[in-house]
View 1 (cartoon, rainbow over the protein chains, first blue to last red):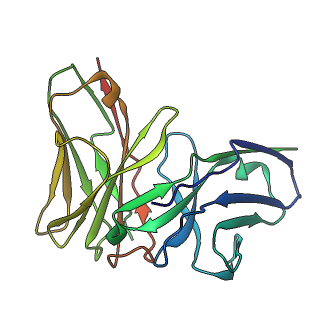
View 2 (view 1 turned 30 degrees about the vertical axis):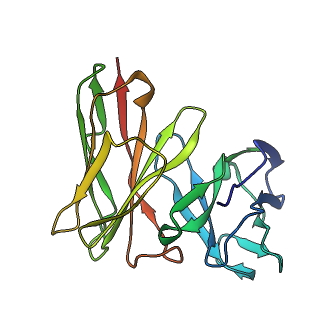
View 3 (view 1 turned 135 degrees about the vertical axis):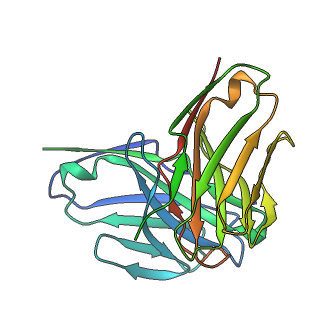
Amino acid sequence: LAKTTQPISMDSYEGQEVNITCSHNNIATNDYITWYQQFPSQGPRFIIQGYKTKVTNEVASLFIPADRKSSTLSLPRVSLSDTAVYYCLVGTPEGGKLIFGQGTELSVKP
Amino acid sequence: EAGVTQSPTHLIKTRGQQATLRCSPISGHTSVYWYQQALGLGLQFLLWYDEGEERNRGNFPPRFSGRQFPNYSSELNVNALELEDSALYLCASSFLAGGSDTQYFGPGTRLTVL
């Protein structure tokens, strides 16, 4: 059963690149890794998903090493509006469990 | 395209009562997931429904149950409410069953048990 661990909080400044790492030592072969962003009183919003190596979209990149025991969400040039809680999700429904990390509260300062 | 909708937005119940929460997935999505987000405990997987069947559940007691209707909307029922059931209940839907499918979340129902 994959257990995920993330830093509780991170601080950054506008324009900087932010990297948030999620550890998932017991990830199963079929598990995907998905990252979500959540603002207060809202549902999580999909950011990016990957299985291995590197994935990039218009808002973020996801780096997954060969052993897949961790993943790193990279947010290029953050702005104040990126202040939110970021969650990693590991697992598949068929695998029995969908495991969210405890979330990383990112605070972006001017 | 309309997103995932949930009702009610807020629900206040007393201990021992039953609560019913509703979710309408994005059109075309057949899988619905329920999560509990209690203060300080993050997002906990509750239930997964696909094509009208319960496919899997998380580590929650049987008093948490639900169903999925032919139109793929879903209902979560919580019986014999306890104070610790107070939480934000989130519903998500996806197009295909499976971990590689992006889950889209609704805004949640805030359940308060007094």
